[in-house]
Amino acid sequence: MLLQNRILPRLLLLPSTTHLTSQHLFRPSRFPHRLSLSPRSNALSHLAASQTVDPTDTEAPHGEVQVQLLVDRLFVPPGASVAAGDQEAVSARVLKGSNIVLGPYARCDAQVVNADFVKSSVRPEDCPRDGLPEFALVGRSNVGKSSLLNSLVRRKRLALTSKKPGKTQCINHFKVNDSWYLVDLPGYGYASAPHEARTNWDEFTRNYFLSRENLVSVFLLIDASIPSKKIDLDYASWLGQNKVPMTLVFTKCDKRKKKKNGGRRPEENVETFQNLIREYFEAAPPWIMTSSVTNQGRDEILLHMSQLRNYWLKH
Ligand code: GDP
Image 1 (cartoon, rainbow, N blue to C red):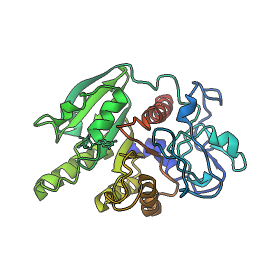
Image 2: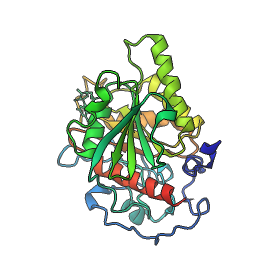
Image 3: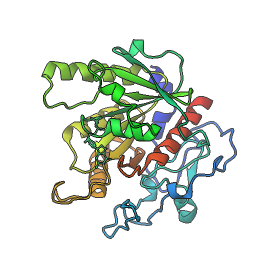
Image 4: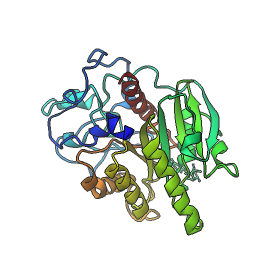
């Protein structure tokens, strides 16, 4: 199957170790082994030596929380390597609010200059055929998918297109910078939808995941302001078991009212979710904390997409 030929899924199968390198898995980079863009320093994170969530976590001035990381839970992108004992250097390369190391394929094409709705498709076969790389956004209804899409492209209402009657059950393609796609997939878990309709949507999106050759990564959105839902865990494990490349995007990380949200803070929900899916992944999948209210994670997601996309284009 073509999916097997995609290199990125192999990243999910890297053995868990304190010395990670992807160089033995990938052809040598044609880019120099240094960053080819000047990442904004505020997009970069800090690494902890020995614990994942720090209960005394420090909040940034605008309410963003730093989650501390173990080296062996980092996502090391193609062309990058991480050596234990080199924490300061690694720390400088981890995207803020994520476990994602910034590698040599992240480039200055990360920011969105223009974005346009292209088409709605009812079958994977009807999707654009120009072969441009794409990233699919998927998540439970109300997870904040439209808000994130609008935040990424800095347009207040672009994702409204996906919410128009008749489009909510479609694969909606948005072309970015005339060179790649953001794809809005139908939300899942509608409590009010008839069982039959839900099953159809599931089959429809699963077919898309398994057949779409230019799908670089699925971005699975999880609401970090509430405790994990079984349906999200099922979705993540299905993607893991089918080796569909996945990035976990935790949404609504600005919501910090403890009682209202089951007494747990977003970073605690993020940690729990990862612990629950760990058995399905031999190495930690990339994850990132976001908020469409504060725009936390926006630049970081775009940098992550840039490095995945540029690697994909070169191989
Ligand atoms: P969708 O159904 O997944 O497309 O979700 P929407 O983007 O329409 O968002 C659902 C609700 O969550 C709306 O009321 C949004 O205002 C709210 N929301 C979305 N993202 C965030 C966020 O990052 N923080 C907070 N506090 N609310 C959000």
